[in-house]
Length: 514
Image 1 (cartoon, rainbow, N blue to C red):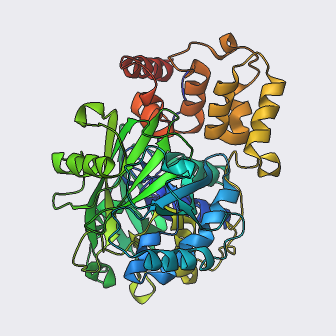
Image 2: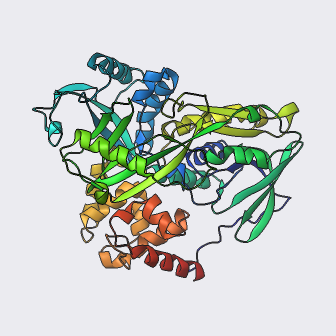
Image 3: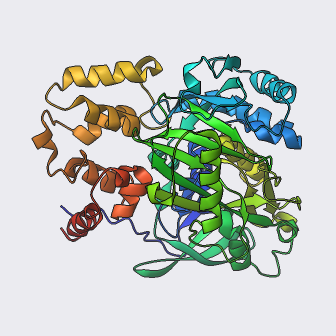
């Protein structure tokens, strides 16, 4: 059976309230919020959802402990409040994680770190996450595998998130509330005509036009490019005084470095920090770096300098003999930070700025500068507040606590839900059910449909990635290529054979043609 045609079929006669350019976390979050307020929404993404920045994060829902050092108290407080709220909204893709912060090699005195952690515990109204504690690495199990040195360490709490899935779930919820979501569709240009924009969009079928009462520029690293595409004599407001500072962040994935489900926050002599995080069961994720990006926005790859820096950090802390030959995978992304003219890449603010250009009551253009994945929901809420005078018919804020697709686990208990799945489907392997539940939550039933045995799920492409799951992703989550599935909607690329990518692409080509 062929896939449904996702390409937009619009004309000059079609008017939407908001046309959103950009399918990263901010664009998807704004689309969801706006659609839930009763606005008509169209989101266009030139490639795949979360293809760039939003899939290249360290995958943390966190307040940003180190931002306290730069006086970012408002941002940290907002993020800390959002941390537990987002966990409650999507407990299948977000879960608590304890971080060990050794004082080994610390450029900061222990009293300063402890003071920062005290603020971190109390600034955001922490309720469910455990508080900071102090341990002795010589006797605590968390010290196993570390190089000998200072005994003191602190343990604090944050959360982990499947970042790409967070974007997709926001897009799915936006669509369920009436938004039109179009991937592989780019905004070519737009010109303002009084109270509306006339925009040209393009996909594989060619160019079309659509009218919109407002445009949201959530293009991330391409935010200034979209401003240029919407430029005309009427768009000479404050947006042109804003700017982004592009910073590349890279990560490496290594074979598992230590036992335990805790992470490490590692302090380096240059005062930068690197995380070591349990990843996909068999691996440890190491990152991130901060390098200025001076080229035009685009795909990024790790540099040799970044590899050396991350491996040096690993060897500084862990009693392992590790080298470049042990790296299983790397990924890099360009973070579009708001340009506050900070002296170094590490010191650039992670806060966001929302700029509305709407001179003399004309149709608005809202541009998003900066931001971080933890604050996406609040950013979207603030964006709708900024646009409020132009859309008086919009409903009130509603997203706080509204669960994302699959997040309605009974009692919010993930393990209990997996046990229920296993009890209902004893013919399916429990590790498979657990992986699916982590990805899809209660929508796992939609993936499995009536399947009771592994054979019912169709062809196995390796490591339990089945025909049923690939079909679900194509029909419900805009997956078109193997890259969409293996490295964004999942990290199954780490677990399957190299030839699997070509096999999945062939499956999707046949699905499209069928």
